[in-house]
Length: 226
Image 1 (tube, rainbow, N blue to C red):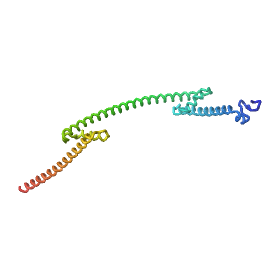
Image 2 (image 1 turned 180 degrees about the horizontal axis):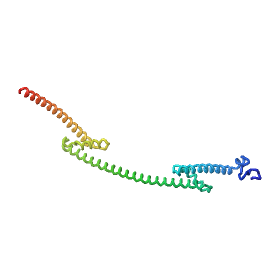
Image 3 (image 1 turned 120 degrees about the horizontal axis):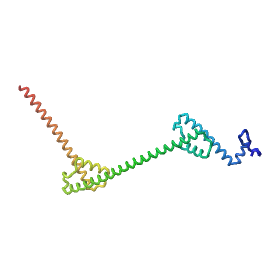
Image 4 (image 1 turned 60 degrees about the horizontal axis):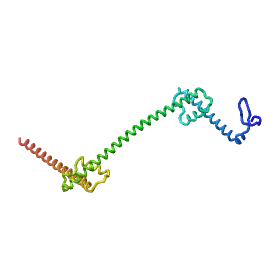
């Protein structure tokens, strides 16, 4: 190629004499591109390795991800690297492996935790389903007993049992007409009892107020008499 004056030699280096050679020889273009890419990679590696040493070999300066993959792949091609550059790549690989192992441990712990949460949720769902089934059975029995007793108010739900039945009904279960009427009658009866209790309390307060007035008048009269 030197005889054909396609390449010129100068102090141990070779240069292309004509750019047309690159255009007409695609393989040469690919070789040059690869060489430029390798040169850029090596320069960046040298700078990164020096920065790592300057920072006291801080792990924060190491390569990771795609940059590390590119450096290890390029090193496999056998380029001449300094001891520092070799140590830098080795340290980067070790640090990445350590990070991956830590991530794997974290993932395993997370899977165990999620499994435990899933078990707890399943237990809670099963327990809730069993409780709902028992409540429905008791409601069915109570509603039938209420009808059998001529819809006697004494058979109706009250207090916590009524609160549980009304809360469960709000979740939308399928209830028979009798069960719906039983809960409605229980709510109405409890409201009626509460209203009566409120009226009784008001009357009691009025009565106590009147008694207090009478006592005050009696005390005043006694004091005047003496």
